[in-house]
Length: 327
Image (cartoon, rainbow, N blue to C red; front, side):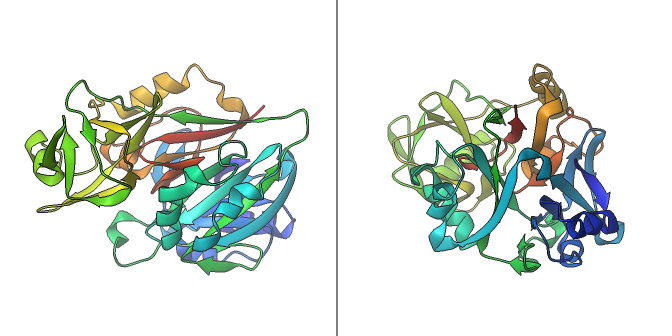
């Protein structure tokens, strides 16, 4: 099960002892009973029929039932304990993880997850909880430790899924963005806020450069080359002299601006058409793709899940779709 359900139906699954991951508004998640579940706040979802935004009045939550996959256990970690997520993961399985946006845990995971012991041998996958965009700055994203029905503003909640020996997990990453053939950008260190950087070897103010290129928000990310793998860094705000980013840039990595994507929905459908969505546990997609791609009401393929403030596949990703499959 991986679908949008009425609140009372989700509550009954919890009372039945099912192991669940649940996404919804804060008020709906707060009305669920304690049990074997983790959750995170978000009102945006991708469904097979298209993108959807829910309100408190809808009294619906998105439920992923992990019970059929194998043994499931639950934990939560403070911002200074996040290395324990991968360390505690099963040898065959994955750690489904939700972290609230803007928290110390979010910043710590973004900057250091790739260096945690076991990060790339014990998959950590999941998403960053958020809020309705109209509530930015007024409401804090939250995660829920369902074992105690407790809301947390600065911690990671984790469902450890241990798979049977004959099964294995496949973490799929769908990135629509490719670097352009233009300027090469490099940065001095790990940072979410950048003043100067190097553009083609010359010291340049990043804010002035992005304004010159016509980039004033997250429509076009920077694309980093991590040994051939493309990882996006989305632009949050171009200030007078600095730039705020949704994910950190790193030193020693080559970055370029992304090429524009003409039709997000068509591009996702094309990328997903060659894969089998039937064995997908869940997927998550980025709020920036949802907004700039006008995905509300538009179908992108059979993979359903929350639309998030960041995606997790071993490390933090932005403007990317992540799909968890079990074979």
